[in-house]
Amino acid sequence: MTGVQRHTEPLDVHLVAVRDGAAGPEVLLSRRAGDVYAAGCWHLVSGHLDGPWEDVVTALVRETREEAGIVVDPADVRAAVTVHHRSPAGAARLGVFFEVRRWEGIPEVVEHRVCDAMGWFSFDALPEPMVAYCRAGLDAYRAGARMAVHFQEPGDPIAYDPSVDRLVLVPDPAARGAVPEQALRVFAEQAVGRITAWTDVSWVRAESRVWRADGAEGGTWYVKIHQNDRFHRREVAALRGWVPGLGAAAPRLVAADPTLRAVVLTAVGGRSLHGTVYSPEQQRLIFRRIGQLAAAIHTSAPPRPAAGMLPLGKLERHLDGARPHLAPGDEEFIRTTARKAAGLPAPDVVPTHGDFQLRNLRWDAAADALYVIDFERSEEGPAVRDFVRFSDAWHGRPDLLQAVMDGYGRPFTPEEEAQLTVLSVLDSVSGISYGTAHGEPELVERGRRTLARLRAAQRP
Image (cartoon, rainbow, N blue to C red; front, side, top):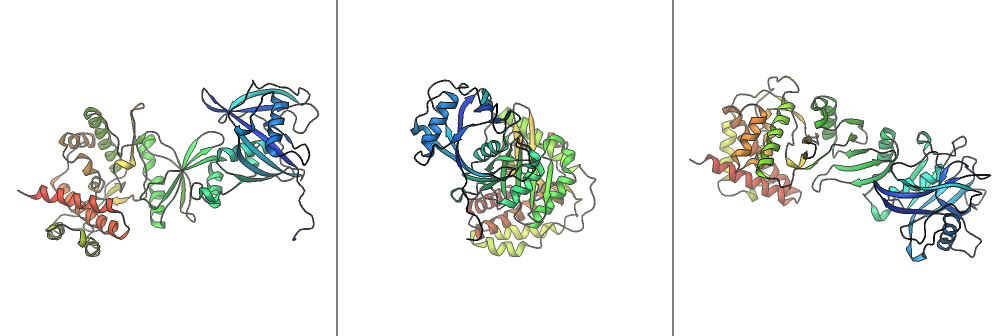
């Protein structure tokens, strides 16, 4: 033993009775009254075990009947979360919280001496004041944790106060990756307050990690860890620089931590355009709006002369990685296109998104709104850089290309058309090389498909 005193905490049980309400799930709460601890505060139906002969499930069924007048079948009791709690006065206890969704009877106040109200409340609109210990258990339950620690400090209020929230979730090894590491959780909660639910929404092929975070007081944010320092710097610079000029069409930066390579962002609406199907008329409307959004990005700062020609420095290295997957004639076409690039004038550079494609564009039909996300590849470059990966979306659909140009406000110049071809070839080769090295055949296929399309367009 390293301590001088063994723990002898009492054990209590808590009922998390859940029903479907008009605005979502609701939980049953009772208000403590009389000569009891935390009188006037809302709490779950709960109680202690009646001696060593009673197990926790039996105790929960008994306390539920005694306090709320409803009958629960032990077979309908589900383990929710266990919380190791310490009160501000220093007394510790272990609370076992159980979820129940079926019962007989209608909940009502039975023990009027210690309870003066009972009701159903939305998880997003919990009443105040609430016992901090109870609120910790509910927040841990909503976050999907199986165990949590809630050790209050002397002087902390008995009622829940978000400014002195002591809840610490203990990660579940069975759900590794579903909840971010402790340092990231602390960083995010310092920015937006207690987060009760984490959902991993990372793109399947991306090495960056993204979680949707739902707050205890309402609100949704996105928390992202970049795969390297360069991507972190680029996204933060864009979000602090030109992105605010897009207004509601883009998320806002809430917090950034260069050590963690992490950002907290506001949520935007809509659903990704990747893989969605719309009518031809709706597609033309959306693509016109995409052209308008691209114009807003490219005019968010004055253009300035480029420092050099189009980027050809990595071509040989990428060719070495891509060569086994190139079709006959591809390498000659690639080299010919690269030689033509040397004769092109250096383009002016403007802010660019860098990964402007359907998966990073979101459309909300009800709100008639388009949104853009993911700025980790943002940097200055020729404006047509943002149409390299997007050009696949209008291939074979001249009406969609025209819609984009109508929204953009002008067609590409002949020089931009040539620049777009060169940049598309370079992107294809690097994609094939990267996909080969990292076991991502879809990148290889996309690069091969783009090369075939560009070669076909060059034929007389």
